[in-house]
Image (tube, rainbow, N blue to C red; front, side, top):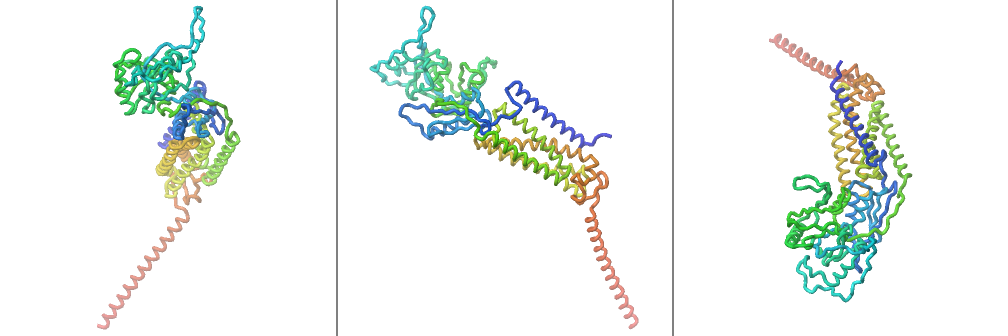
Length: 573
């Protein structure tokens, strides 16, 4: 005998669920064996400890750091750290001057680069370029340091003629030239800064070229977006070299167009503009044409990771001030394994209470609830583990709380479905048709509830920071899992058990017994009213019959009376 359509649909849904679970296991296995992944989720700062980095601001002598600058820097660094996902990092100020960054676990080099580099980007015109000083090679090929010659303080530091633009060589005063000649590229560091309206002496990041650069003409605050990608030729073929693509806002586009238009008419090194990142020249390309669309490209010795790190730094904004790493230490967990164990125990207690309630309320039908919670737990665990190695997610105690709350959300969906099925049974349907009709009614309610929960979690994730984002992520994730499980497991399982004699005939342990539902089952898909309902109908019928009998008797009496009166009238006449 061929299977009915609901049964076929049930097995099809269960097959798809199996494919999804196997796919998640395979993806996690791929991460474990090829991407330094793990079969267990990574823990956040409050449960596993991590690394603490203290950043100290670098300012000119006598200058102070404002609270607005620190607040802006904290926001930018937090965005950089979390750019790869909800890593549960903490970024705060210390003493109104320093910034403290706490990262769970041991951060990779790319994450450390995002934090340590201030990404203070400047575009300056090249005035002078030459070979760096710092060592002399003897006849035998031995390199010895070049003695540093102090700059004569009597040399003039004021231009003889007021410069007319940032490419004007009048900026190169005798004092600046002497300082340039004595500058050692091997001694350059992140403190190599100069006021934006003054020239800067610096070098390429690899120390290969030394420069005198004009004042800043375009700064990183005018960057609207930045991405990384491989360079392409005019024919669209990739060169294999990585670059950072910049998009300026309207102000930056206008300024950069003016700069490249002026440089295009110059010759020699003055045709170049230097891209300065944290006091180092990362690229000094020649100006082949005026760039009017505000979309230049930074090239250099980048790989995929370094270009991604720089793009993220520029995308989230240049820091208002430069910072240097004051200290980097390993810190212990702020809560530890005891609190994690307590959280897991609380979740287990909640799960046990849900299971006991389901079994007490729905008898063996409640076992479907237990099985559904188990499937939801497996899928959620796999998803969180995959997010850990792919996107840097860390499970905090707040995230564990989100998982515990999800137990109630998931169980609520099952209760809505089961009660809709029972309502259909009370209305006189058979079990199989009640399952289908109840699902149509319940699914709308479940979707509405889950959408509200997901929107709340999404808003919380976007607006919150730190551990609260972890709570929002697990809450939103489990809401999606709930919808998946109730559609691909709970409903198909109920379709299958509806085919069994135990449930179809309403056994007292099935959760669909006559006393609980007020209905009596007589074989498959057969329904009869309960005794109370039948008695009520008999009582109503008796009253109606008595009423009709009274009316008939009254009419008969009236007819007899009328007939008697007529007979009397005839006798009198």
